[in-house]
Image (cartoon, rainbow, N blue to C red; front, side, top):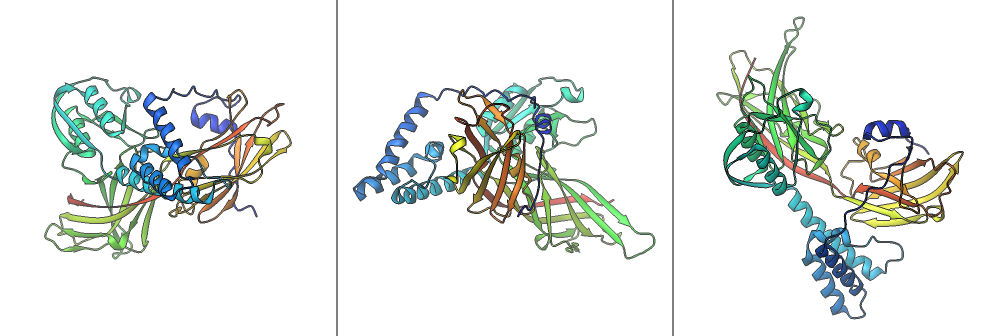
Length: 442
């Protein structure tokens, strides 16, 4: 039974991605693999073949060596299919799980930055991007601001990314703009004349930076008991990760005034769920407090724990011979993609598929919009790319989604076309906590 309909016209997709919707986009020319990468792929292929050796010692040695090669080989591991031998399937699954665990552990640790001496701001940005994988983009021209490149002097030795970035931005009188339009990047702009420095105003928690931005007090003049206080906090993260929602259990939030007295928390909502919209680099968290007596001048301290639900590495699933596909299945990194059929419906071809996650971490329940933005396209026999013209959700479950993608091929038949689908292969729950201090009350 159809549980949800999400139709997106080709025109809308074209507008959202800045591409022409009335013609297929050309397939970008892939970069040639480096000799080292080609050699690594060759080595991985040989070890994968050895996983099916007649000798147990050879199979175990190959599995051990694949794990030792590290997460860089994940892209070279073959997808699992129904034809994959059981022994190879089990060993590849163990290898992939071990490598993904190592990759996740590395990805969820804060990146470190080392900079020393006098340099142009642009040079500092380039070095930070190279060291951390966090891309920074200049938005000053968009706001009609002067795009100067001042010299700055910094001394940073293996400093966590956010502290390092705040130091560099303060030195250049710049700040972060949270509502940029580029996925996987942080935008910076000039700082206003009355803006306070970034260092010393925020709480740093691993991948996250949290800063109180405003506090709002409301008094209902018709009811003396209706007096509320709300603390608005900016939460931003290293752009190399992609959260889809932050969950803040209000039971884990506590606050005190400047003298250590308790400030109440309005826990009626239970857990705050703050979704991440579009490509935004940050969100606003509104923490509900019980308004203290007028004699209280500050929120001396507020502590909270939260969970960030983050999308993992994107995997690519390719299915050749679209016209012959029927219940074709590929498994990679904790996600299974099944292409059920390709049928003509008037002038449009419908490709029905399902995506199943081993563990979706609640990401397919309340906050599943991200999965509708996954890349899905066809490659014709010449390698030309044909974007989908929309999609329909046909199944929604805890760990599984059914989708029907629409393709307008004109007079061309689907024979020889390859169906390509790209999706994050894991949904990760990252725990974090923060403490904010010395917040003046209005």
